[in-house]
Length: 76
Image (tube, rainbow, N blue to C red; front, side, top):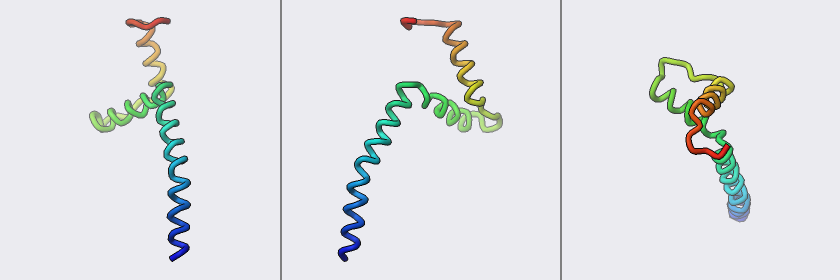
């Protein structure tokens, strides 16, 4: 059918920019560290299902205090 072909071509044409946008968002979240909290929550739910993960604010407070206490090899 003609309508099926049109719908397929539209979804294909709109799919590439959508995939590109999702890739950009994924990359930026990784660079800024925002995805670290999601990884923490996934780990906590898998490894420790009996306890509640920290809230984002509490998690970042712990991360930053750990960085301040143990600066390691970073520039600042």
